Length: 97
Image (cartoon, rainbow, N blue to C red; front, side, top):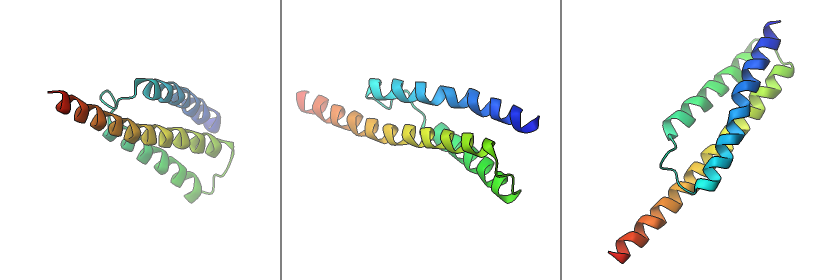
């Protein structure tokens, strides 16, 4: 039962990350995104994966941890791409002024 409940938690969290990813891609800006938050979430998922591996609890729950950390990683990549867009937009604004 504990594995099932842990999976439900991971699925609930996991459903929000693709939504955030699409929103970030469409926004083309990192202004509303917190790098600290994304890193904190990544560290949490790494800790969860590590706990599973250390305790030799390699089961289906691990798959959900891995899926979530992949999508959060994609969010991190989009964050840095959007930061680049923000810098380029800032340079254009300075040239116009």
